[in-house]
Image 1: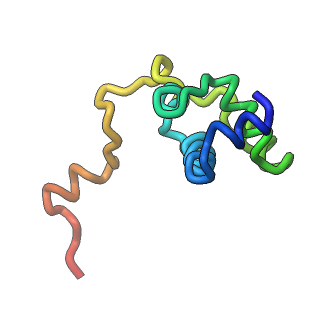
Image 2 (image 1 turned 135 degrees about the vertical axis):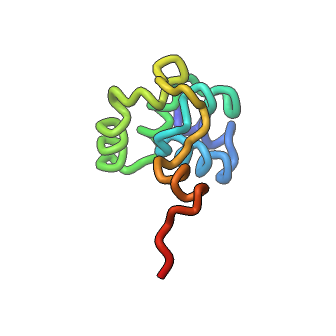
Length: 97
């Protein structure tokens, strides 16, 4: 994918959203593919073209080996995020001031 293709294919809003989704830990590459049609390798190239070099390196280092970026690698009993303190909060065990 060339930068000219990216400019023609996506609006500025779409470009910003793709970058945001790529940086989010819990947004899998499959969600980006479903919404924008970019496979993982295309997302990597997209990020290379639309980020500063240092930002791209930082993103790649962060994403390498991250299981949450792939639906098949996720190890979750409950697919929804739940804070570990949620149970104690809902049982009203928070000390009152």
